[in-house]
Every structure is written in structure tokens, then in C-alpha cells.
Length: 80
Image (tube, rainbow, N blue to C red; front, side, top):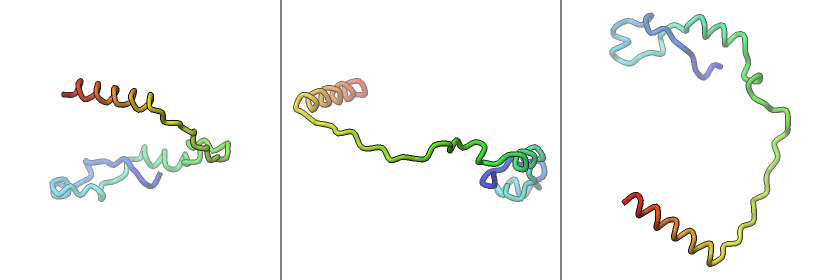
């Protein structure tokens, strides 16, 4: 919640707007409420532990190579 914030651009001076210096703008009260009321843990769904998936073994045959080449040739034809 600290990485981003919603700001009130009306709180900037004209010079700060012209120089794109928006980090001095006041944070909107709505964003302060959201930041205080919620934690990022509530949005992450970490009920299950992460597991590493094994890579699918893939056998590349001559027929597969020909099909891929035809598909590539078709894409080249369609895109000029």
C-alpha cells in the first residue's frame, strides 16, 4: 500500500505542475482510509504452499517441425 498513492493535484502550485513534480501533492483522504483499513495480505491468496511444477517432456518430431514451419509461413503471409 506504500508503493502507490492517490494524490490531490489541486494541492500543487503552478510551478510544481509545470515541472512534473507531483511527489509533493497531498494524499487523498480516501487513499489514507484504504491504506489504514486494508493490508496486502488480505488480497493475496496464500492458502496453499507454492510447489515447483515439473517441465512437460516434449518430443520434437519431423511432423511437428513441418507443422510449425507451415504455421510460421502462414503468419508471414498474413502480415506481409
